Image (cartoon, rainbow, N blue to C red):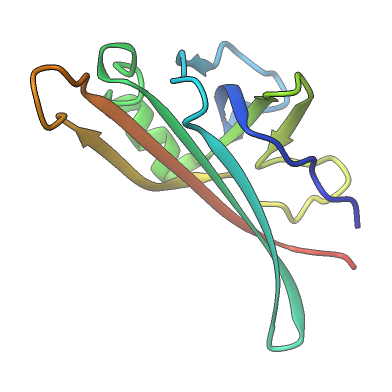
Length: 138
């Protein structure tokens, strides 16, 4: 099994999972530097290997309008999304779709948190957490 590379996330474009083959225009939000991450966790449950993917994206509230739209929330909840991710070291990976592993599942919203900030000096942020699980071939 090949593991995805490790590194902080610099950028991510999110596409509707049901249109991944045609790759129409995706949702691309400017992220806050050094605040986003990708975690790939390999687990064995009841004798089967499972890979859990967690993509955490953080942006300024003023930039996150597309994440907060009802259309995006519905798409990411019901259809799922595929993420084209740029890591801090400039490598690019795809999460939520794999030609080799057709069992890999699209990512769905785990949480969407709007932080209004604690003081006037702080800037409100939005944190989007996307999650999926797939069966691993080890």
